[in-house]
Length: 268
Image: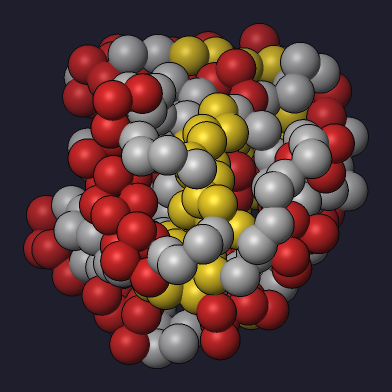
């Protein structure tokens, strides 16, 4: 059984772990996912999802007890940690060394140096590097393996009849950033329709004519291919999923506490 530690406000954290499960062909019923994400409803039902509020992860003692109980209850033999080697609040820093009989895996993407000024990385058996630009000197591990995702098949927009030509704005949240990308798309628009793919609820009075929002639908490959231009942030998952379409993509990096989207854009 696999236990996945998935902490993060954005949809990208859950999406990355689901792509890992898909790529590794791990049976969904063998997965337990521990998360604080509001996007927990996007996890397939076959996966056991344990949702906890942010405060739970900040209590080192209670978190350690829960982790050990969870491992015992679900007969976990593999722990997979998404991005934050010591946990977002450092809660894994002392937990990982206690898991002598558990296989430990870290999914590593670019992390801001500020994270490692606060927390130390425990030793992982395997660190999968998911992109270029990862400062491996900050990590402790027995083995490093470059990893390439297979993207899970998407459903949703393929069934919609999209007006052409069209621009596509892709950003899960927050609303302010989605609207900033939308304003950028408006600057380029001549006669194109604009579709906004986001989990954020877009107020109707913030959208101009010939604009629609697609809330919670998956963006399929055909939609990406048919878009005249694509407007996105520079998060890990977005950059991965739009790799084929750089020439028509407009990328705007956003400030994050630990993700360095500006560094990611420089490396493209």
